[in-house]
Amino acid sequence: MNRVSLKTLFRLLLGLFFIAAGVNHFLNPQVYVGMIPPYLPYPEVLNLVSGVAEVAGGVGILMPRFRRWAGWGLLALLVAIFPANLHLALNGWAAYDIPRWVLWARLPLQGVFIAWVYWTCLAKEWRDLPGGKTS
Image (cartoon, rainbow, N blue to C red):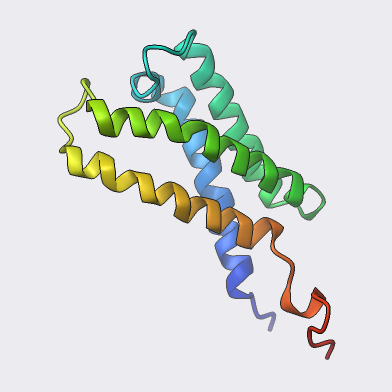
């Protein structure tokens, strides 16, 4: 019986998460458009671009040939959307009655997702590092 590594399991979960989140940009665009700060132009277009990027990144994670590219793309996306999350924490989310502390608690989650993408897509395996075990 094949044993699935913890890293492989977390990679699968991350890929499925990004695919689902990206598809949700198309199914419930009002949620995401409402998160985009008012100083950014074309919120509907930004929502669609973000949704496509999330779906493409999620699919890419699941394909070894594209995994590193997907990882770098998702890292860029996570950094790019951080200002919108900060804007929500600072100004609240007018469309939803979400306590401000919840919006602030979302900010460290960006770091968790960044680490998750890095570990599952970009980090070298211990055995592949200089001096790592080869057996």
